[in-house]
Length: 91
Image 1 (tube, rainbow, N blue to C red):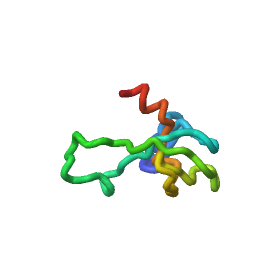
Image 2 (image 1 turned 120 degrees about the vertical axis):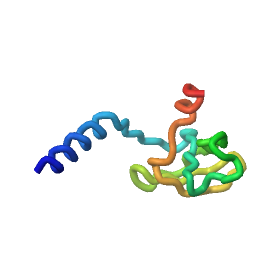
Image 3 (image 1 turned 180 degrees about the vertical axis):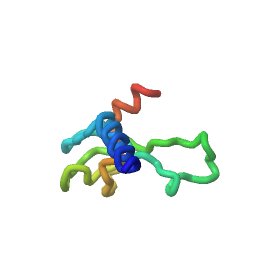
């Protein structure tokens, strides 16, 4: 019983802090580099974001087709991208 209440409190806190984002065709975004795709020779000082990419198609909320600056397409899930202006504000 106590464990269920704890999980509900944690879920409520998480949901209150998450900012849902939706991107439109033509928006420029950055792709998050995960530990699985990060170059191990760069260590902890390597980049955490890659891009910019342009959104070329929205399949459904959270799934986008992106195009890099060389016009090569790729498919990315929304949880791994952010607005390119958000990144520039934090750096």
